[in-house]
Length: 391
Image (cartoon, rainbow, N blue to C red; front, side, top):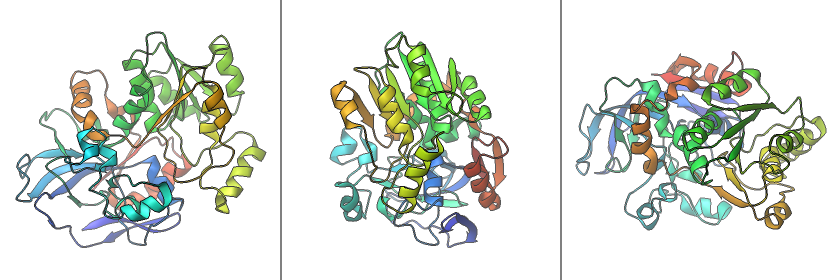
């Protein structure tokens, strides 16, 4: 089959690789109809996530048709149309029983490797390095899905297109969870750093969950336009104004009730010296993050508010404002999304017409054009917000 493979820093290639096979009774094989490039895939592409190996198959957002099931999978049949959540979760361990599916204790065979970096290990994740299990990803013609009796959700409404349901695999639940954990109350003001796909879904989710004002922060006009489409009531171009000053002005000096970081470890800062400081330290591996967005979110959040981190971070950062967190009674909420928890409720919202997730899609490409898609998404050319690959 054809698959998108990591070939080294800033390089992916679509190669011929062996077809996946059923390895356990709880496996299924899915023929991919749609898959997409996620912002967190760019961290792999740019070489900031350790333990990648040349030839690793990328991709953790995918859906398609079940073509084979193991003997232990009774909930799926050949021919079912399914969306596959990016966390690989067993459904039986202590964490899964608590609904904390991205912390599954049984799906990461390389837990010891992750423990050395993070203290404890998260779940296995499709196409996301040996740290999260070394599983082959879904930017391919076929994918093996472990624990298929727990993960995939059947899409039985044939009127829904792939673009409407594909993002149940990751970015829609990720954006939604980032808002849900903020415990939004009527009248609350929410600020979202980053108007990429996760940020856009966080904006849309904040509106759905009752926020009065949602402020989108980015530097690209086309992304800010898309944020307005998602429901943002206010837009801030951080290259044109001081974000802390403007947020205070917008909120009567109090700051937002919730600040959401939908950027992660490759953030950009408008001041060249500040940006250069962290960029050099990151390149020299003196820190693993460029933490501009999370620093600013913490400093801008109103007293007693919540800082929610949806952007991916990998290790350690410099000058983390812990004093601001402690002295101002801020709460931090974060985590890889527990996607399984949100699949059915969010599918119901789509079916009810509350949201059409396809609004984030800007480009459809053939699988063989994946290298072009990565470059376009990384450099934000051609007003690229989300690339869907169709094998």
